[in-house]
Length: 154
Figure 1: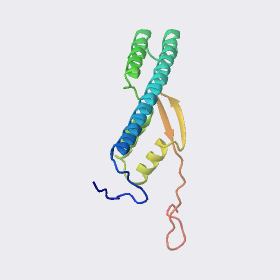
Figure 2: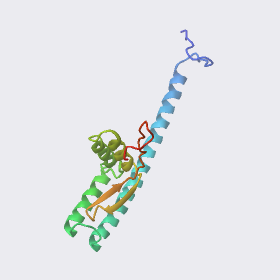
Figure 3: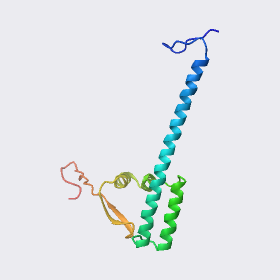
Figure 4: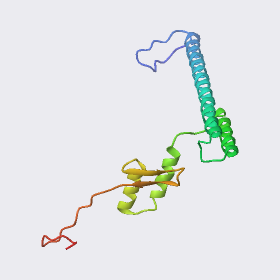
């Protein structure tokens, strides 16, 4: 049996079995490492989900939310169940994407200013529980000069 050297600097043995066994062993070690990593991550996320549920439940029972107690407890329980199944997404990427999509309806500078507000520029007042947030961005716009040196506002 003749082997063709397809990898420079790699010397083939006369039998393919040791090479195949090494690759299979490497694949097994890699698989076991991946499984252990996923198990540890799942255990941490399960503990984190339970801690979040306890915190949300305490807030519901103390009346610190803008919902009635029954609704609050039901929502906290549903969020905990989804978190245990890995279906709860707590990051704000989707909210930000939705806000940026609403900016697409605007034209020109208005669109740019809208996107800048969403990305955190400017000042935010109000709260969600208070009825909404107002995002304000102050931008200086230079006055256009006419050929005679006077501004357009004169």
